[in-house]
Image (cartoon, rainbow, N blue to C red; front, side):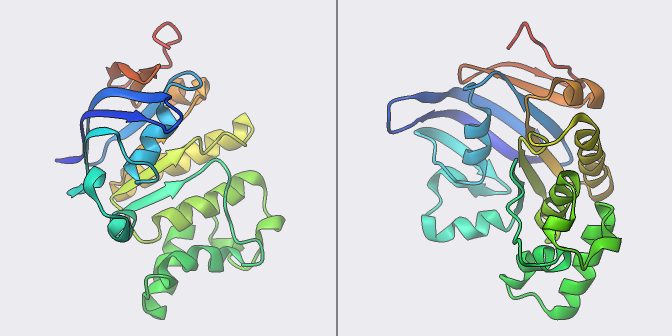
Length: 232
């Protein structure tokens, strides 16, 4: 079943820069997809279009049954509730504990306290941080902080997890830890993962679907692909 369908999408910023040209892409439920390419290839723009940070100039984007391109600003929250989003910078609440950071995502939608507790502990167990619920972000390593951010992104059990350079601030060892967590989420929960990255080692190690963008155009789409320097 298709969870994401991108049809004839182009994106031009107000300064005239064309970020995406005539993009066609389908992503099925349960896929794990790397979006790779050189600086300025359009990979971050693609992620931003999927969660409606930016709107395409033309074309159609269907995410979880919603037409993102036509979605009114007042309805974007309906899309975001279907998604988990992880960024390069962790965006944690520094004065809140690990538990509170993850619980916040459920509190804002008015979930009952008992449900919050159950889901937060499950999410923290999945990312390997169940023993650190009372700690604060500044007591954690960079890798642990990113795992908190991932737990917060998945606590509401989204169908799709969007990741924009989630290992960009981490050393290779911590990056591998994060990728193991994302792989577990993909295989255990069946969550569809779409990840923009420039990390060659991770892409080659994981052997997932690889979509390559070059100057805003899709140039390659390979199941169990690798980081292809020639295509980039």
